[in-house]
Length: 139
Image 1 (tube, rainbow, N blue to C red):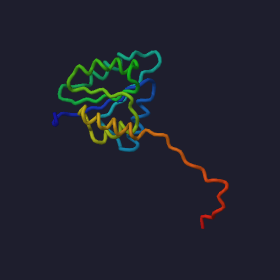
Image 2: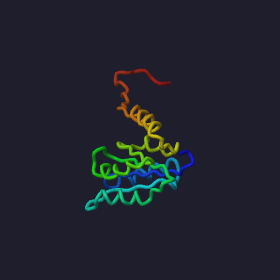
Image 3: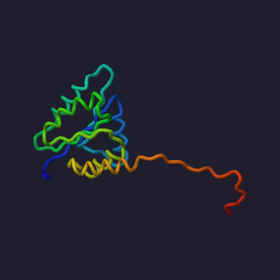
């Protein structure tokens, strides 16, 4: 499958997919094989699945990056995973998407490793304030 073309799709509720694509391309540059689809109010998630399905060719490896596991959009595009060339990843965030896109990763096994790395990057960060009792000068 190494000679196959690769396509990446970001799917979400509302504008999240489009914003994630814009943020990603701001950092890594334009990606001609990256597409975004957002379910807007009044829309139907099956429309997104149909649009993606129309773009998928037999000689293409496909990764779909979705927002919420169990959400309507991911549930709708999940039917595309019956194809051997389609992988669906949920819980997508910028570091995860960036790693997959920069490396053009389509292997489920490799994506699993990227997911673990993205999870490790999720943490609470704090900055301890300088103690008001400190009388030491920095100079």
